[in-house]
Each structure stands twice: as C-alpha cells, then as structure tokens.
Image 1 (cartoon, rainbow, N blue to C red):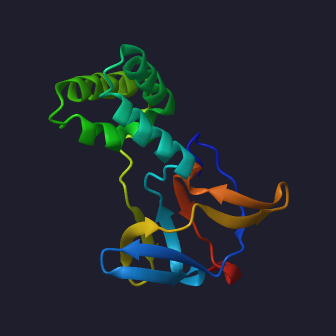
Image 2 (image 1 turned 135 degrees about the vertical axis):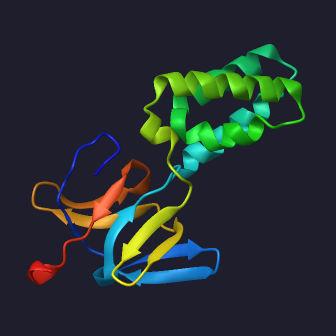
Length: 166
C-alpha cells in the first residue's frame, strides 16, 4: 500500500531485507517476512534540504528565514520529526518558527502521515523486528509496470503472500 492509498500487487525481486536495529544489522529473508509497516523514510535529498532549511531559520536575514519556512512547509510531513527537535531549540526564533511550522503542516497533512514512526516494523512468523530498513528502495516486478524500484518513502505497508497458498 502506497502513501496515496493505492494498492499494487508485485513480486519482490530481493532475497532479503536489511534492517538496522539497536542490536545490530539483520538480513531478514523475504521468505520469513509476513508483513512490513514502513516508518518515515525521508529521501536523502529532502533530508539535506530539511537540515539546511532548519539552520536557516536562525539566520539574521529575514528573507532567508522566510524562505526556509516556505521550504519546510513544502516538504511537509518529512520535516515533522526535525521540526519537533527544532521546537526545543534554545534559539527563540528557531523554536517559535518550528512551532508555527508544526501547526501549519498539521493543518495541511493527513494525521496518518504525521503519526509515522521513525522505525519500520517487520513481522515474521516467529517474531517482530523493529528497526530501520537500510535501503532506499525495494526491487519489484509487476506485469503492468515491469521491473521497478519502489521508494520506501512512498510505501506504507507490505503484505507478503507466500508461494503455494501459504
């Protein structure tokens, strides 16, 4: 299931999914996975933009602060965790703007997107793994789209159906 609510059936082309947990990195075989609940995956270029924009919230130049504010509203829910951290800043201007941005983004964004946890939750037959999938994409194939790289930043859930009716 994608972030826009659409559902597509695909065949994953990878044998495992690597997950960074607080206890180390795991390679979980796809054959063991039953379901994945994707956390917030911010594309690297968007993450860089968020970091730079939050730094510019402290600028002495009003136009820079204002431009940074507009950029952060534009990236929306991807900036939410960083803005929460910035709202606790000792710099009053940064804190004030971050709180204001949190409110603006909250009004424009579905609550489901704002509640995304930072970790992924991978359910297997034996246990649940909580961590961050290390890749930015999953390789998949669909009869309609051919081979594609699914961006984790656009995925919400994945249910794995085993071959042979299991």
